[in-house]
Length: 513
Figure 1 (tube, rainbow, N blue to C red):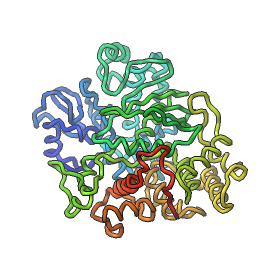
Figure 2: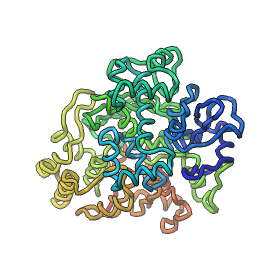
Figure 3: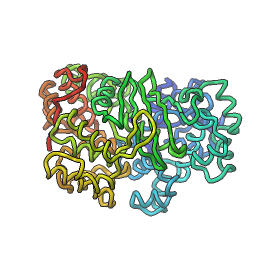
Figure 4: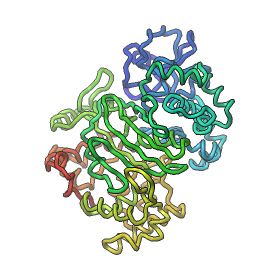
């Protein structure tokens, strides 16, 4: 089975996935069972319902809108997110990315519509048609999930949870939890103490949340380990004993996250200054690690193996699988688009280690100081625009370009958010002085989780392609997964150099615009 399309779910394909309890499709669609009034993830261990009693819906919000409650056995809201929001670039997909980041909680439906450049009426009509629910219902489903996490992982008073999850009132919070989960918030908390869930860890230190973030297997942890450790900026990021720690700005303050790879999930410890930032922080971590990808579908398309439902494109198997490419590779995303752009520009034409030194100097001089193991936040675009010339070193033209880019972000002339289209973002990036095709492609790929950007001008990617015997001028057969091909080729070249096993990490790799 290929990725499920939202507007026309294939009943037979969905039912086959449910019959075999195929976890690959968790989060890609939901099973609504008429006889029980519940909705489940495809891998739910319950007895498979009869065909006549089920329907398949594209989102949890659509199921809730239709009057179904969440299964308390399989917790469908705790499934990995749908990979379709990254594969698709239409309005519905871009809206889902922004809803996950909490845009409606901060600016309401008018804020979401304005960010996307559509009227509220047009946006509601498209989302209802495509996803089975309007923007408010989709946001309500996210609030319910956030509320459940806070109920089960903290000792916060219910009134505080209601506010932190984005509800307008205690009554709305209580009604939503009862409607979605068929229990009161108090009962849910009591039950969670007796029966540990798959996506939470028992409450511990006050103010610290520990979650299990699920992903679809396989996961190439070696690649993510190298990427996070090699690019860690002292003062803002730390890689130590298999744990990645960093500070980040959040919509209502800041947070410190600690991530480690475990079988079947990523363990995430979150220290949030404001609990309202839980949902967007989790969404950004999932984006950073590309946890919502469909690795079996991607690997099958790239020729790294095939499943019963995914055919391998003709001619790809020998070219890809014969060169030791590891299944389950991910395309690392980012935690903030402005940070990604400025760091990428700083790192142009210098080694990863040298770039880290320059960025660390910037963070130490201009980044806000906070308490915790990583005491600095990446400086705001306003700070870089105002004081960057005093801190940044290197060619005057590059420094000027970085400061100008920061000024464009600060003034709102350059908008970097996950609701943009790849074409529009790339065009705006290329309009900046000092930004060439490689930087524009790299930033677009990582900030939007675009799956089909081939970094053809990247020196390391080209070296990997040469070793694998792949013609970078003839790659259409691997669409729409060429971003993942780029990562495979990048990794191949670095492994040949010994960079993935050497400490400190990569020194020689350079990229050019």
